[in-house]
Length: 268
Ligand code: DGL
Image (tube, rainbow, N blue to C red; front, side):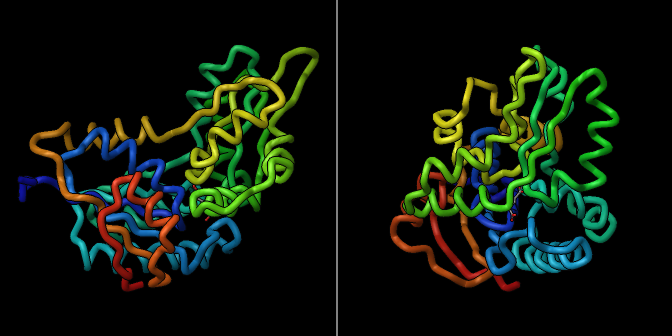
């Protein structure tokens, strides 16, 4: 029997990328209840202007807080976190865990001191990302690679549509740099959609690199804030799309693999 006192955790993204974070957080706190909100009505966030995105995220989160009263919110989106975390914390009392480019661990772990950050064009051009580089990348060459297509490819792949190798290869090619024999050895996955494509990324890389997925670190942060598991496994995740759509069978099956148990429209 799920524990009625177990926390409710809201995981939020523009689309399905946050599922990669949900999986890690669920593994760390399997006893919690989860609501996953995909703001697919406004996807992709990478194309929104900063003022528009800040207002949109505040509106969708505010509506979700009123509807689900979660104990914690995971903002499983780099494009939103690098812009809106401070605004959300100023407006709402619930604790937020954000997802921001893992530049600090990547630069610490890199042996070649040549690291690529692969995210949406919005994320890689944010002041937040530039500040992380100034603070944590001393002695490391950081290549910023913005993609306007990979998040779409990840959504398509999860829904069972074919995405051509050449299309993915073209998006990741700028990450692979050889500076007098010092080649990129770590690619930071700075968009939560990209781990959905990990087997494809590995297969298409010109040489082997570590693909740094922030999900395990986010799960650890959640446990730091609300503690480890305390009871039996919680209910399946409720999934809500702001577009009101119901996923087609192939996507519904993929979502079930991520722990989804029911679909409902989000009132946003
Ligand atoms: N999943 C989002 C992120 O982590 C981005 C996708 C989008 O452009 O909406 O940045």
